[in-house]
Image (tube, rainbow, N blue to C red; front, side, top):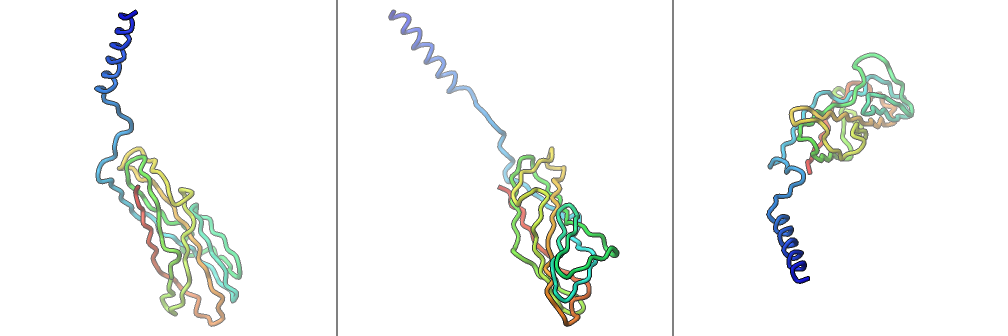
Length: 173
């Protein structure tokens, strides 16, 4: 009985030392520092429309669909409606969070009138996503849409071309 007990203890010590000296590994660590590059491929464009005196909203979704509410009438000429497209280059499995300000001001170049832009539509479904491209040289396409808030206006200063910028921060985790 003593020999059996010694054999069992010896086996357990051998098993323990085997587990201690073996290298165990899981997922490979990402390269340090983590590299993320974002390039703008297409700009956000709301197309042509006419605003009535009551104002309203013009929305372009991430999939290039324009919807209008309020006293706004869409026109089907001029620049085509399009969501913005950003190419995100990162290692597969990188967690990215998109941050922006709450609103942006667009300015009419001839009259100085202002309208607000809200960024609110993402092809990723939300502001945090995991990169899926097979490698860091293949872009992860992120389409972004938004809403223009057209104010009620009777002065005639609204018509024209509006320009402005919005900034998105792509933060890796």
